[in-house]
Length: 246
Image 1: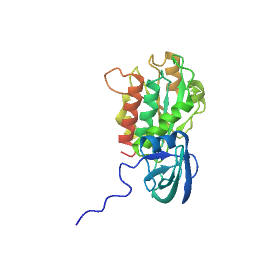
Image 2: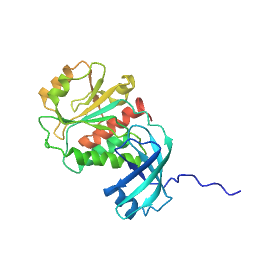
Image 3: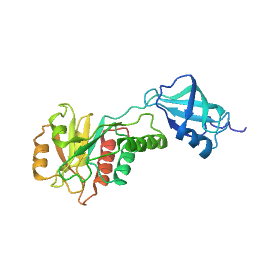
């Protein structure tokens, strides 16, 4: 007996859309239409997976394909919205290229929120949040997420610490040494955040201010000196293994 092919196929393109999804028809325009029509060669009857960050993943079937737009008939929900582990990543902004990589990996690894945090040694103090959001969306489309992480406005470290919620543990990568990261995270609660400093590290006054926060725990990420973006990915991976959805 010939096996029935999976529908929709694993190769089906995925798109994030801003409008709420449900049974009905949706028009795709602009860059997304170009991607489907010119790159993926979508034709009438072809499937497209859609998600809006709120209601899960839906199946759309192309009912009209034009040069600059196409219509999709949204027929059924394929998956409910994912459970998102309650992890924030608070990271000092990095230079373009490295910060793009950082937000992409933060999304792929499953963080709920990314909070750019300005420190005294932060080299970059202005971020193109629209571009970073686009990188997050592309990462979510690629890795199968049904929720796009929240991207907060940049905040100074002093403000971050001043307004820190009482019920959220803050693990900070301390160049001066700390508890082995995995052990600390295994013992921590379900609501947590990871704080990663700039390439030059936190200065002494900043380190003292972080340590003074009752919810803060200094962690070590091993014997090697890691770049800030590597440290962020490593710390998030450890937390996901200890408390997340891995």
